View 1 (cartoon, rainbow, N blue to C red):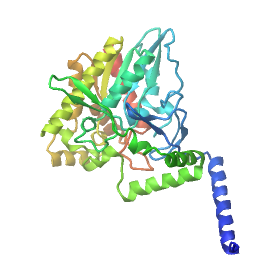
View 2: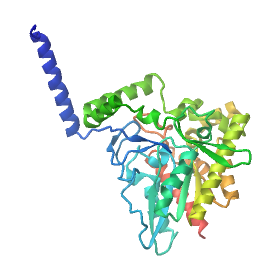
View 3: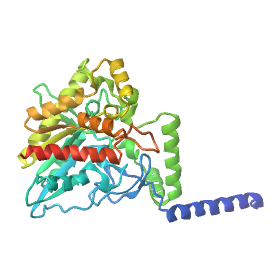
View 4: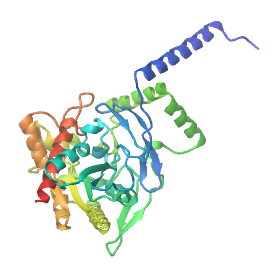
Length: 388
């Protein structure tokens, strides 16, 4: 057997030492980028219980997923005496990995609501069930499957222009559950064929070994994060909602009433899901407030850019889907809260973006800490007014 060339042995040894040094350095500096999601046969994907680490794809925050799989602190299943519980169901705006947990809108709500006497004599507790890229179907199923078990007094249901997410004909993400309307108008669930594939990949022994290695190696996590950032920057691989959007993050078909059978069907499914969520929560003793997340452009501080795009698409503003959902919620006896107009006024008055981060793009993306504060104050004001 021929001996291994000394030069190659030296290179191999140097590489091992370099990688070991990098691994130690990353651990010493606290770097981590774990696998946040796991597949779920009903919901498609959920957060992975116990996952923790630094999230820096947009903004930067240390994220801890609790033992029940929520980006939140630990909560008992049984509601403590003297507590008023608010269950928050939504997508990435509720998951809110971009900011520290104490800066999220839902974490700020208890203090704001207690300050206005929303529930005199009770301690207000928010429970966060938000998961990135969830559509209305998953939000409804999360409420039915998990959130309601915590006996909430109020369900705070987020709508983030999720109409496309509720149609298999329109949505680029296919590994999620979809509902269809039967001839009699009843919703029928179709479970995902390959749940969570876009988040956790196909399962196999080799894949599981690979995931186990990634979980244990900060170096591999760094390499995967670097690859993702390269793809986002140079190949335009934004997350699935952005792939189907138009200019400046606007989903143009949602700026006006539907103009095709597919979009009309998607709207009818969306509204049926919101109605079902309200009825389900009510049967379990919970009130429901539906709040709408505006397009980032709606709350962009650059009024000239906003007006240019409004003229281009022939609309007076970007609030059609917000107005429609808030009005529908009110018609069904729920509280409908539109964030768009108030957030636009806040951005115009302050001149500072409520969306975006320096490490991605200010003005676009998800809420920064100013955005979360604005949302918390607007929602709290509406809830406080509803009690008067």
